[in-house]
Image 1 (cartoon, rainbow, N blue to C red):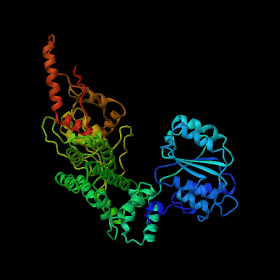
Image 2 (tube, one colour):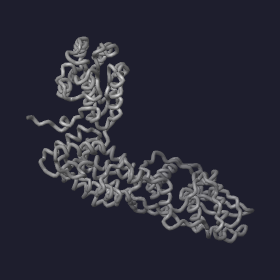
Image 3 (cartoon, one colour):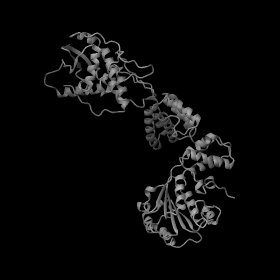
Image 4 (cartoon, rainbow, N blue to C red):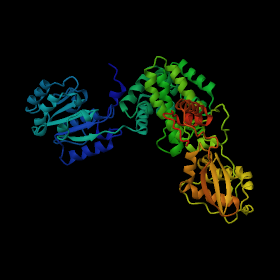
Length: 576
């Protein structure tokens, strides 16, 4: 006797046997009970979710010879039910829409539909992949589909409902079949393995159910392929070896090396995966899956139903997730999705994959403006500093520590920052006493303590405001007004500090540091060496080029461009 594959051998025979489509089965059973069976149905959904199976069950329920009327529980033993199961019933016609998509075939169907069934109650047409019909064929169906003979029922099945004409859909009752969940597929696989008396490891069920992508037929086909190897018990290692899948433990090790900024081990991990027979595209897909699990774990926790992992895999994921933040994982997944297309079409896919993996391992996933300015605060303006590649985990960025009376954060807690639009913070009741007041006109004392004042601004108002004040210095104090001058090249910083509400925040902070009330005035230094003679256009152009080169070579600018992945499009000279 010929072997019957598992997908056919264990096909559901009644509405109660259907897996994962309970709502569809329940609705059709009620329609049969109440005698409200429609003349046309449209079943939509991905492959292997039960569209054709339920169409056959509905046909058996309508034509079962065990009773005098349609039933919700076909006997599956009468001549009609057995013929429907094998596809040989002369009153239930299964038509492949892909190979019978012409208008002539539809006209023949329409002409034959007027004749009554030979031995059953209804003549039922099941048209699979109905979206493959031509427009002319669809139009030929319209009239009979709208006013069919009382003995005719139509059941259409398709994986692409968007290609079915709206005029056809409006004449049908549409049922959307959902993807079958991993637990439902796993339960059915256990039943099949028990019926077949085959030994297996428990972890295999979850791996097979995930690979099926919501398709019961795909899961049974994969199981059939695995059984054909003849190796018992069935295991995850056998599945990976037979299907050429990446080893889960190796994939998590690779992601861990990326999170640890270990460039050498990252390259070694990729080499081991490629040596084991995986393609670069398979590695990219596996990286996306791993990082998706880490993203869900970091966002929703390990108890979420969105995470489908074995206990051992969950432990590995929790260990690796500590080396990443959610923003970095989102960036990595987006970059890998773009990388997949490039790897498929590249003449050097391995090099491209290795370069991208090193990019993840050796650079920060995301840098915001505050982090960039905090890095710039610790970098001399004129020094050419070699870029230190940061680690991609969630260590807090370096921040300047200001010696200003304020609430001290608990150990391990980040220092608070004040948004630009926040009101000035009220000093706590138990704060230490402010420093001794600065006397009128004592500008020397203010200049001497200016570095500490800048640190206080950086700590209280954040590195964004602190960075704007780097090129400033106190000029003079008279009649309660403190004038702060900026370098002539820092006109933008001067304007931003003078703007509200930043100016009020700076004034509040300086009053606290100086121990007295002052009014702030922000001004630009006058360029004492300014040439008043008629300008020389050639000299001005040369000066502008020199400034442009100096600006582009400035370490601070390079850090900002690298962190934001940006390019310079225009350089303007704002000096008077």
